Image 1 (tube, each protein chain N blue to C red):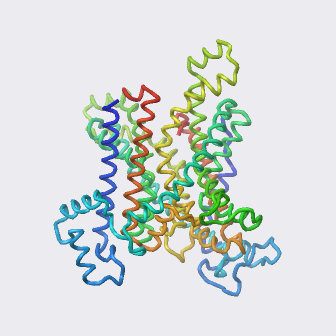
Image 2: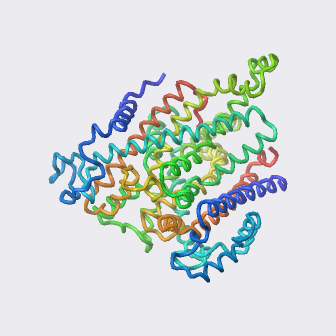
Image 3: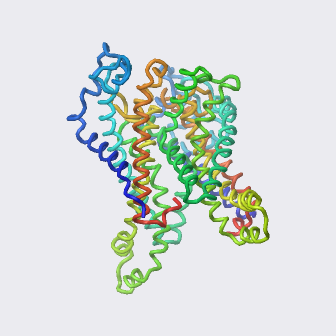
Length: 305
Length: 274
């Protein structure tokens, strides 16, 4: 178990180093970093100070070292547009994103997992094909467009729900649906294939032979084991969630880190963008690590492979 | 055996023809603004005009013509990104699978890393540092593709490598490079083709999403994602500006995915679990 966790920590560290290196290279090689990091009205003094903090006169490896050590000390640069430390901006927006993500995940699982079970039980028959069609449609529909269509139907035409921004519970409905549907198809497909595997297994056959009622066999013996691989999907989903959050928060003007990423892009706020990307990478690595450890804890086979 | 998916094939061919012959088919210039004709609804609605079959946008540009020209962007980006990203993935998959050892270890760890980190973030970073444009967009989307190609191709190569014809080639003294190029490569091309088809939809959605986020081909070139993005502001007065291009994206992606599923069942049913 210890070795397994150590290996995963190492993998996460390698990913973070890669991301940092890419951000660093793109920030230095594609233009004058001073121009990219400072507002247009920056004074000569500001420029001087930036060159000193980033060690821009030094050789490239020492620049990288300064970059990494600044980052480790929480100095990720200053947003051009907001004129605040990028880390503070990110942290102030993070709770708003975390406020919708659990609901979106819950929605995706509540719809995706039962649909996957049903599809597996009725393999090849009408219900399987119907839920398969839903999944295929879900994958083919661009998320940002779905959000706009939902705004048109429920905010503009029916007037039931607000079209965006943060507020009371009614503000959560459309963003959660948009982000949730983005994940539902993944949960459904994986649950289906995992259920199909488990239902062939000896212990499920034994449960049947023992004469247990079918619902107990399906929902207790099969689903519990089928959900183990679905758990690993959480790791992959962090990446998807960030992609989904960027798009969803942009559509609904939701003031979270996804919208912040978008703002950094359209305002060409490079220091903010590089900070946001590195911080999102840290989040991804942390969640993956937790998921891996949980997974190894639930399924002993993983620990020893 | 599953039936040939005629409807998707017809839809894809229509879109190909639209893209290739756009200047001949499009009724209007896709960029020219006619402010007098702003936000006209499609022809089947009350105020619709025959001149603009699918209506006009905020600048009085013909939506149908923009849709036809937009198909070009989707097509060009899809072809280039699949060649670049798919090609890199294919090479890495073969190298990792056949050579094994530390090469495989390093390459597959890179693949794992690429799977963990969302490519859209790199795409946004590239668009800000390198500037928006076709090159940036294609690079960004290739980054999204290569890892999944590499993973599948590698596992194919792992089984191919055990086969007798590979052992025979070795005995006959073929070089490693030669074995990879003329014995392994031809045998993974079927899988490669299936992967290409299954990923066209991924590319189209990615291109549209990046355009929507302001990191695609810069305006005024019409792209479907940009059209949705521009229509968002006028959704309350003119739903068709955003809804119609989105429908086009959904319909096209649905078609290529159905075609891809069918092709996979024909060429390589083992890839079912993908």
